Image: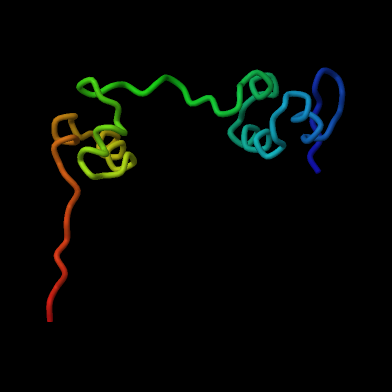
Length: 100
C-alpha cells in the first residue's frame, strides 16, 4: 500500500484519489508517468486534448467510413507521415482466396 504526503498529511493513494473524484489506478498511472501530485489533482480525467482537425471539411471518422477502413488505420497512416492525399486515397486492401 503506497503512502503519499499531500498538504502535510500522510494518506494512502486511494484516500488521495477520493479527494479529487478519480480512481486510485488513475493516480498510480499518473505517478508512474512522473506527474506531480498537484498536476494529478488538477488534471481532469479523460482529458483528450484538442478537438480533431477536419480533413477537407470532414472528420477522420467520416473519411474512414467512406474509404471502408477503420479510423485507427487512417490515423496510423497520418502518424506514419503519409500526406493527406495519399492517406485518404488508399482504400482498404482486399484479398482473394487461393483456390486449390
